[in-house]
Image 1: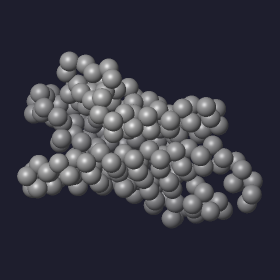
Image 2: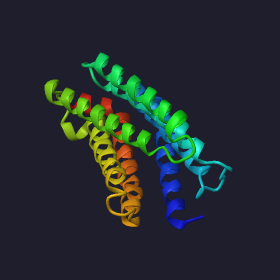
Image 3: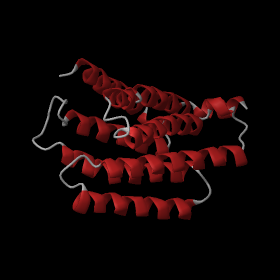
Length: 209
C-alpha cells in the first residue's frame, strides 16, 4: 500500500476513534459527521490503494456521493435555523443529478461531475452555517463553536476539491493537482477533529458564559 495513503487511512481512523470514544457527548450533527467519516474510511479501504481493494472500486464513489450529500444536508439542517427548504430542494436536486450522472453518463468511469456537484453543495451548506453564525450570534466565542470549525474546514476542502476537478484537464491532467486535492484531506480531518472537540465540550463553554 502507498505509504501516504496508509497515513490518510490512519488519520481517518484516529479521528473516527476520538469521536467514537466521546460519542455520547456529541450532538446529533456531529454523530452524523462521525458516521460519514466511518463510511468514508470503509469505502477508501476498498479502493485501488486500500488494504481491502474490491474488483470495481468505482462503484463505491457512485454510491458514496449521494450518500455524502444527504448526510451533509442532515448535518447542516441541525446546525442552522434558516433556509431549510431551500437547502433541501438544492440537496435533492443535486442527489438526483448525481444519480442520473452515475446511471447514464459516467457509469463506467470516475464520477467527476458528481464530485463537482458535491463540492458545490458542500460550499453552499458551509456558507449557510456562516450566515447563521453571523445573524444569530452566540455568547460563546466564535472560535469555540464547533459549527464554526466544521464550516471553515468544509469550505476549504470543498473549494479546493472543486478547483482541482475544474482545472484538471486545463492543466493537462497535472499530477500536482491530484496531490493538491489529496493533501487537502490532511487539512479537513484534523479540522473536523477540532470541531468534535468543541462539540464535546460545548456545555463547558456555555457554562463559562
